[in-house]
Every structure is written in structure tokens, then in C-alpha cells.
Image (cartoon, rainbow, N blue to C red; front, top):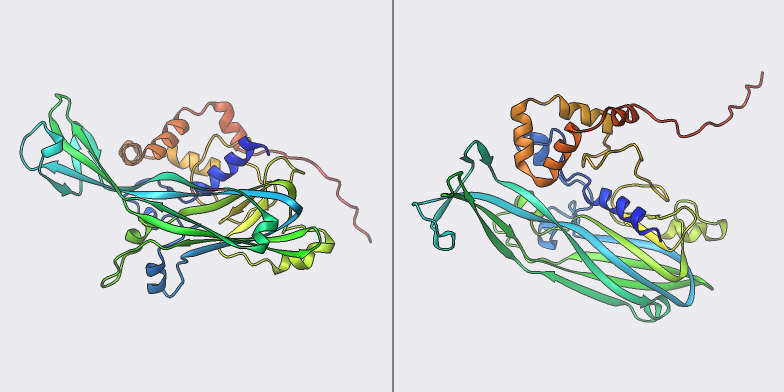
Length: 351
């Protein structure tokens, strides 16, 4: 497996839809983020009639034997609710300071405002034998506890001016694994992710609240030892029927790594082709769905100073986009304008 190549593709999938142009919290477009790979809490999904899924299922084919081993990682973003508060009375002791939550805080020309940040999470399932799994399915439960952090904000004189409050809510779920012999030397492997987080529904619940306990941009990376994955996009003729029968829900399994290698598969919430690549001309992630690097970069450069300020102060990931774009060398801009990948002969028209 080409670990660096696989990680680059998985990272691009992970942050797809994380922040959309025009990259500012105040923009209406960014109030509906994360359109790909969201596995919601079951109770919320049921309230929506199942239109917002609480499960994700991957089915793929493995050419192997009794010795074939598999391991997998489920990766996703866990949202962090960032709120802003100011002290109710002057004090330099953040641990015992009464405070009130506010919609905006200005300190020495810098603006602090609420936002949904994100942290990368991984659930790893250790190596298991496919033949044994075919005889007995298994479940891998996972749980991530709630956490609250308070970060003091101080002015240029060192006086306490406010707080950044960050809250992570509990996420709990399970990965169900099963396998079946389809014929001699061929398995069907099924991976089903479910979100069983407890969430108070009451009179209903907003999507933004449900996202705090969702698996966002969820995807699965599967690796084999003593076996090979079969392409579901271009399977051998002998396996074409089995490939069509694979039932994938909310995900798209493709081969990843160096072309020709078949030991790694990425089950992505975005439709990809086998052996996807990040364009070498791309200077870095822009997070926007179906992004076109040149257009988005030019739009960033056309922002007003006030818009850039909001972009810079909203999120660390977005700040890096702005800084990278503003310092992009001229030769990189020329590469974004177009690239010739190769030539092929054109058949002559018949009269």
C-alpha cells in the first residue's frame, strides 16, 4: 500500500464540504455544510423518516483463501460547538469566573464568534480472518465521551476579556462485520456502521444540533493481507454478477494506492473512480464540493479586507486556505490555468 497516496485521498474526502466558498460563517451557503457521508443519530434519523441516514454500509468482493486477513479504519469528523462568552464581572481567574454567552466579542480589533469546528476521529478494527468471519459475524462497538473546554481570551494588557467555550457531545455506535463465501476463492465482505448516540428529541431537533453527535464525512479504509480486492467498477467477467449484487448504502468502494495494487480499498461517500489522484497542480484542499482550484482561488483573492478578516478569524483550517492563496507564487497560478494530461489519436471519419 502506498500510505501517503491513500492518506491524501482520504484526507480530501474527510474535509469535503467542511467549509464552502465564500468561506465565512456569515454566508448563507455555510449554514448547510457537510452534505456528504453524514451518519446521524438513530433517533434524529427516525424523526426525518430515514431521509437523513443513521447507517452506512459497504459491501465489496475479496479474492482470498482461509489465510486472508483484513483490518479497517472508519474515519470521520466530530463537530465541536464553539461558543463565545464574556465575564460578568472583572476577574483574572478563568476557573471561577461567571460568564454569559454572547453572539460576538470584539477584543483589540479581533472578532470572536460562534462556529462549528471539527476534530478528526478514527475507529480502528484490528485484523480479523475472513474465513472465520464467514462462520461468525462480529460487532465492534465504539464510544466517545462528552468533553467541555474553556479557553480564556485576554486583551493586549493581559486582562481577561472573554472565553472560547468548546463542547463535544457523546457519540456512540457500532461497526457490524460479516462475510460470506460466494464461490471458491471469493468472499463478499459487509461493513455496516451505525450511530446509536442518545439524543434528546423533545419537540424536534435542528440539523445543526444533530450534527454534533453525527459521524461527519465518514468513510472506511480497508486493507488486506493474503488477498486482493476486486474492482466493483471494472470487475473480471467471472465476478461481474457478484459485483452488481453488492449493496452499498451511502458509500462508494474504490481501489486506492498505486495503480495495480489491490490490497487497499476506500469506501467513500463521494463517487470516485479506482485509483483516484489529487491533481499535482492543486496547491491544497479548498474543501468546497466539486471545487475548481483556479476559480475558488481567484474568488478568495477578490475578497474585501473585511471579508478576509472574517475568513481568517473563523477557523484555523480556513485561515490556512487564505494564507496559502495570498502567498501562491505566479508559476502556481499558471499551472492552475490548465494542464495537458496526454494525447490520443483521433480516428478518421468514414465517408
